[in-house]
Image 1 (cartoon, helix red, strand yellow):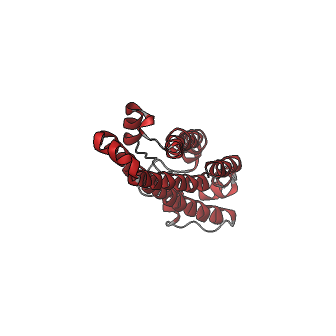
Image 2 (image 1 turned 90 degrees about the horizontal axis):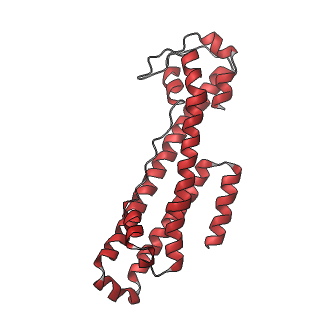
Length: 205
């Protein structure tokens, strides 16, 4: 199972599909959550749980963090989808040189945003400090480590690269073509110039 998941992960990374990778990451977190629940039900853990309540509490914390992280990733995907919808509206409008209208201001502004990345790892940090061998199941232990040390590291790196790219490319374009008042909408300084220029459409594409 882990080998199959790793092949999927490598394929998605190679193809550059961050959204699909986030969905894949959610699936792997779900497997971790299921594994924790199953592990806590295994009979030969009973004595250990009785004698080491701290360990049991840590595993429950990891489980709760995993649920929260799935919710965060789903929210990021939904946010990103809204941004892509706005970007497509702007691309369609500029590509067909349609007449500017005020409602485009929202989509111009929305297409410049990206979701805030959130990740809960308090349970995993406690588990590392307590000792990963607290988890007797090799498969579950490796899955938890993979989610926090590999999958999340990839997501963090993708977010960092995206933000750096936005700062280097998008911000100069916003300064060039839009007014600086970006509280609720982005106002184009010269719509005809923006239509003739392909660099903004190329960026959004």
